[in-house]
Amino acid sequence: MNVGFQSITKDSAEADPKLEQAVRDRYRCADAFLDFRLGGALPPDSGYFQFGLETTCYGRSLTSSHQGQLGSPLCNMLPKVSFDGTQLMLPFDPNEVIDNLRLERYPNGRFGGYESRLKSIYYRLRPLTNLPLRKSIQRFRAAKWQEMQFPHWPVDTTVESVCENLMLLSLQANPVDRIPFIWFWPDGARGCVSMTHDVETRAGQDFCAQLLDIDDSFGIKASFQVVPEARYPVTPEFLNRLRDRGFEVCVQDLNHDGRLFDDRDEFLRRAALINRYGREYGAKGFRSAVLYRKPEWFADLEFSFDMSIPNVAHIDPQRGGCCTVMPYFIGDMLELPLTTIQDYTLFHVLNQRSIDLWKTQIEMILAKNGLVSFIVHPDYIIESETQTVYKDLLAMLSELRKREDLWFALPRDIDSWWRARNRMSIVKDNGSWRIVGDGAERAVLAFAKAVDGQLIYEPADTPQGEMPVRH
Image (tube, rainbow, N blue to C red; front, side, top):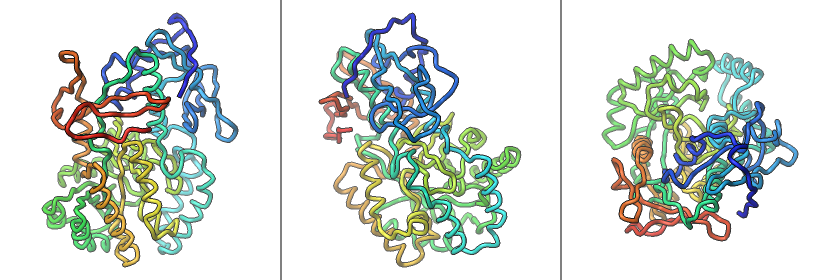
């Protein structure tokens, strides 16, 4: 990536010393290497623009060079970046843009009034429908999903691309050939894999004992999200059976009626009950039913992490997507995004009975060293045909584990690591860099470099060996 920098004076810029925060949080690099400043006052309105090829952003930009809707070619803001010494002068606020993506603050990222009314009608009538009818409704709802331009299907890594472009620009602006940072995963792992199971019905609960054996036969541990009320009895014996086998228990919604976020007062009433069940179960994590979500309400949920926001949600009842394959904080809660398609959607909406789409998504996620996270419901792999597909997925993951340096982790372990990494820092000691902070013994020092206009990552001299580097 070559950028034709323009000269600009500080007097014309709007200062914000925290403009680098989102990029710094991603890399956990030393403060001195990232220095961003707005090149002027931002207008009040937001829109779409590009920041490099095929990197669609949403937010405010200088001179209002953005569009309210997608369709025609977008303005590329990358050539509009300038510099003053080692300081980048930016035409947009990267924190704002990244938050807009991760919190789905863009058109079609939230339910509108019309869709909310349809959703309310659907859930009122749902008890009167059968499974084939519900599948037909869901397929009709998703009929034109392939026409959606944003987020990018089948995996959207816009947040990663924005951060990488800003790191490349910082390398050009600084008199250094590489920038040290704390590698994303413990022990230098290339990426992370996490399996989760949402238990929706009594039949699914009954199948859990067999599912434990299936997972264990492939060396995979998973979290089980249980519905506290209305669906099936959640007994101590059931929960202890999961924990005693080394699996994790998380809370899924309250009663799985799809209406958790419909009304603020009702949400607060339900949240109090959900929090009580979380304490009773010793659960650190939460996921909402059907991945319905309002991130601005998450603060009322007393969990360490959430797993309700998909990476791209063209085929889901609530569309949108967080456009990242990395964990991120929403206030004090860590979000572990769902980065692959759900089994139900694959089997019953797309009518596919193979792991081909999962394979494609895994490759795209690991190319960005991201989190490969799955939802597989015990309810939908009881049948031999879909169970075979799930076993094919586990076999593929097992082989991948042998070939690649990947971290297979429960959600609670990812949460613990990401929080520890977020508290670590890099310091210079006798002319070299080292990582300090609790948990630093598992952290790996890495460097970001520019090679032929591309950002690459390389490890410091550590026994872990080489990392995949091209991005």
